Length: 115
Length: 111
Image (cartoon, rainbow over all chains, first blue to last red; front, side, top):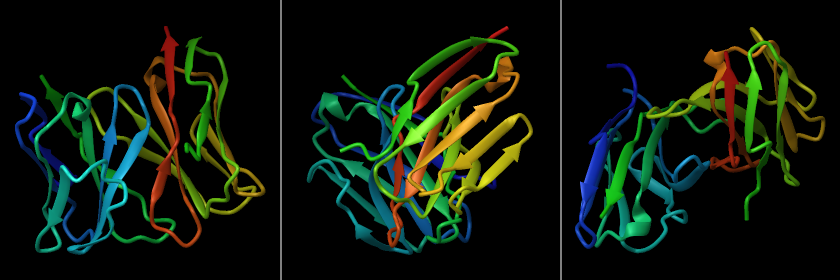
């Protein structure tokens, strides 16, 4: 497809387990963003990639969270030793650049539930 | 600190009514975007406004960026059930790349 693809769409796991979330951006988009959305709330910025580099990791909630991007394309967000407060929808967006008028294209998110 | 406050948080109206959603900040933004999000899906961009005082129309939706580029409004004329969803504003601070999202307005239009 031509849009941003995220997998899995849903993930249920036990507290303490590690999870890996995947984002496949639109082909050619150099900028990639990860956000977290709690139930019915606005989006919380987590991390931004320009190419394979992450110039700003300040939104990551703790050192249990990490993200990488390879080949300027696919990105993975990893949460280690998950806690119940990590339960949320994790959204990925990509854009063709970082200029003011560059629209973000979002995937449908991964709904993460920690038991 | 929430830099973008949206009001109202919730709105339930009858089909055919008009409504306005506000997005306010004490900070200046170089651009501001409005998104609509439906359950189980990611936000979808409706419009981007860049110039202070700019007004953009998208069918029954009218978007305005404040003169000082600190606030924005979304006005819907003759709302329809298909307008139901979560409306989000997002701003970019000058000299940055980071999108700051508002708190969201959940709209329900009853038939």
